[in-house]
Picture: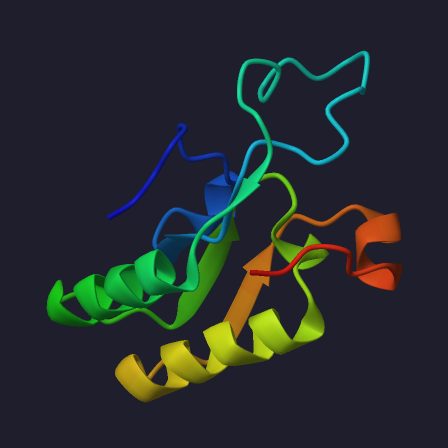
Length: 114
């Protein structure tokens, strides 16, 4: 699995599959947050994401949910998110939902793509 930083997720997501699609934080200027201060914001390459989805499929775990990792997974372009959802459906058809953290403004403006 490709992880460039530690896993950051709410406790109720502990049994879910984790998939990093971004690293660092695109905002990185919240005074209260120090989690991503030393990590530059990058998008995970789609090839790495597909490798990780395949690895999750081969892990033997039966995930009902995939939790997208990175401070801003929903900043990716809609086309990227749809492609990632398609990969998850193709390799992990038992998955019923996909979640992750998002900034409200990232849901409105999809600025980044590969």
